[in-house]
Length: 300
Image (cartoon, rainbow, N blue to C red; front, side):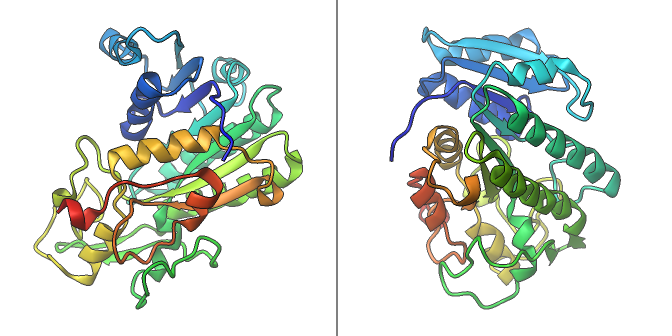
């Protein structure tokens, strides 16, 4: 699959996923420019860490503090015109217990950034970090391995028990689902000038992201509880996305050739190669050249 390095802007750059990707791109990609966008100012330690990751490679690195909810904030709007790919992670609350207030803010960021990417004279690729929770209503079905395809009708929101309390991610997942549909509409309208990738991320925990810290809790904000080897525990383990598979997947999403994508937009599942998982990742392999290296059960 033909690929070429594109300059990349990353929103939510100082968060869990954005920072992991930026460090990877600085160290291993040929992107000539990286633009880190966040509502916070980056301190000197962050700036030094990203420059150190580049290890002498000639890459232009820029940090932009901005408000993605504000369409009139030209700090981020102008930054989009200095890159060829945008990866959008930013959210007011990135966890599945987000409130309607959180989702309202996140949806504004989703719509603003996707429209700005489509309107930009330079952006060729927009990558939207959506979520497995868009398919959460399928959790309690008896799936064969690989049967949960990304083009099935969405089942928005997961209902589960952490071992200590009931959880419902429907509010959180609604903004992700709406963002996917928005990207698909913009991809069709763009007629190839900007292509869109929606990646339904599995569970990529902050930090080391070890398989032995996954549980029926389903989110790092909740206590693990006492359920082990329950159906819910297996559901969440099966969607593990290791750090190196995450970085590979999103880097390929910024670089892959997209001229043959249907209507200029694709939706793919983003998990590691976890044996027996219901999630089907063949679309990510086919469209992006993704080849996951890790298996949650092999690592455990």
